[in-house]
Structures are given as C-alpha cells and as structure tokens.
Amino acid sequence: MNILFISDRFPANGGIETVTRTLANAFVVQGHSVVVCYRMKSRSEFVDNRVEQYQFSKTSQSKKIDVYSKENIDFLRNLIVEKKIQILINQHAFNKYYNDLCKKAKRELGVTFIQCHHFSLFWFMYSRPKIYLPVFLLKIYGFLATLYVTSTVIKNSDKLVLLSESFVKQCKKIFPWKNLNSVIAIPNPIPNLNTQPINFSQKENIILYVGRMAENQKRMSVIIKCWSMICNKYKDWKLVFVGDGPDLEKTKKLAKPFPNVYFEGFNDSAPYFARASMLLMTSKYEGLPMTLIESQNFGCIPLAMDSFASVNDVIDNGQNGFIIPNGNLNILIEKICLLIDNAELRERMAKNGMENVKKFSVENIVEKWENVIRER
Image (cartoon, rainbow, N blue to C red; front, side, top):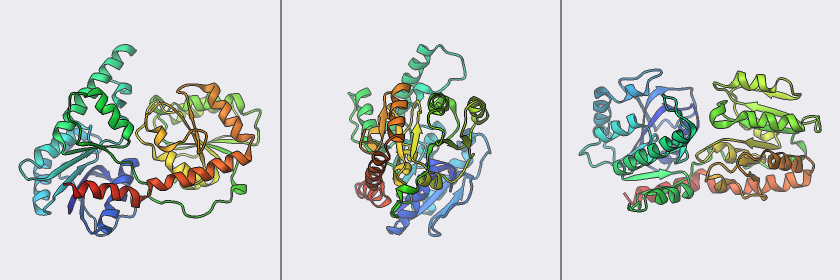
C-alpha cells in the first residue's frame, strides 16, 4: 500500500511525532510505500531512508491556520496523485485546519481517509475559550464542542482511530443514534521495548514526573503539595521533574521551600525511568499517555489519577501500579508511602509492569494497523 501521513511536525517533537515516526519506519519494513508530509521540521531522530518526507509549501512558525490554504491544498493533492497514495492518515483529527485540508485535497481521488485522535475524547471540557466563561458554562461549552467536532470528524473519515476501547465506548454513548463501525481503537506503540533485565537493587530513591510543565492539564502543584507532606519523613528520597513548558518557573517557585526537589528540563526520559522507582501522573486529562507505558518499560511504577478512561489500559490497579481516585491527595500519599516502605512490593509491581508493556510493542500495534489496511 502507498500510505501518506500528515503530521504537524516531524520527525520529533512530542508523542504524536514519535508515533508517526515509529509507524512510518515499521510500515516500510512491512513493504509499504510511506510518505510523511508536515508543517514544521523539528529536531532530528532516526527515520528509515525509505520514508519520503515533504514539507507543506506554505508554512508558519506559529500559525497552524496557515496550513489550510489553497497552496497547501494543491500541494497535498498533487502529492497524493504523484505518489499514487491509497491511504491518507491525518494525525490531527480534531484540528479543523488539517481536517479541512485533507478533505479538500483528497476529494474525488478515491483515497481511504483515516484520522487519528491522540487525546481524551473530552479534552474540550478542559480547554480555555478566548472569552471568559464561568466553570459551569465552560463545561457546557466543552461538551457541545466535543459533540460538534467528533460528529464532523466521523462524517469526514473512513476510519476514526482512538487510543482506547474506553474512548470508543464514550463515543457510542454520546452518539447512540449513529452507526459507529468506523470508530475503532488502536493504542500507540512503545518505540523501544526494553529487553534488558533490570537490577532492582540499583534502583534509586527517586519519585519522578515526566511531561510538559503545563499546570492547567498536568497539575504539577498537586505533586509539590504531596511532596511537602512526606519530604521530611523520607529524607533519602528525591523528587525529580523532567520536562519543560510554560509553567516551569512557577513550579520551581512552588517547590523552593522543600528539600530534594530537582528540575532537569527537557531531556531523554529513558535514563530517568531506568533509575527511578516510581512515576507520578496527576493530569486532569490525557489520551493514552506514553509516559505511563515507558515508565513500566523500565521497571518504574506508575501512580496515576483516575482522570482519563484509558488509565485502566495501562495500569492494573495494585498489580503493576496504582490508580488514584481523581484529586484524592491522601490516597496518593498513602500509596507512595506504601511503596517507599516496601522494597519487595516495589520489585514485584515493577516486574509486572515490564511484562504488561509487551502488549504495546511495535509488532503488536502494527499488526492491528495491518488489519485496518487490509480492510480498506
């Protein structure tokens, strides 16, 4: 098959770019012809030289709206024709500009149009409109926006790929009158499955946060508050933040009164997962966060808030991590202390996690994609 991916940035920036690169590399190994078209070139990562890369003819450093233009519609349409594309995969299903761009470019070309949504279905519930709204109106706005955008994307797509069966169930619940056979679930693959044994006696006393430093979604302040209540009891443990973002300085200021808090900035997370004993995730919402999967991959036990439906896809509560009732700081502290005080439990849960992540291997996820491709 001739496959064309649409990605805002390529080959590396965040989770979506990593998934695009991983699938593109895997598809050419499977014998497919793969093209990636992107708006912005980002930092370099390995891309198989059989994967062709093209940048849209009209681009902007900051404005995604510029991607929807006559120049780019013509550019993408010509690329589809020239490369004899059979399957078009848009990695930004809920982005209006990419949705409209692909819809117009592929018109009457007989291309199978697959759109992927890499976040929670209800992420609009937490988005901030440009005008001020009280909280209850914000939630109404978010729900209505979710209904409208989801309905539009389903209408425009031959397949809509969500990250979790739990999101597919949510979709069917809000559209009980629709035939939603085109809405399916395929999780993201973990690019590099760790096959090396881990010496758990060499694990360090590190509690880890990995992610974008954005308070509105990630709620780093919850982690700081939690640390403030246990740091004096466990003086040989560290809290380490890996990541950058708009609220980095604000989070540093919050953490300043407390000992053993370290900020590492944007870095390769793998060495931190390999050293750390546990990972904290306190987000308001997520899609299927690769951070949880990557932590288990290196024997780092995840503790995550029950704030997104797909958390159950990764964590089997009490077996390979802990799912914390959303916003319940007391239970989060209780589980952290339980793990700190019990090295045997930490090792057992870490080993269970390393076994669990095998279901997210590239081979398993590519096979799910192959089934979709064969059904074209």
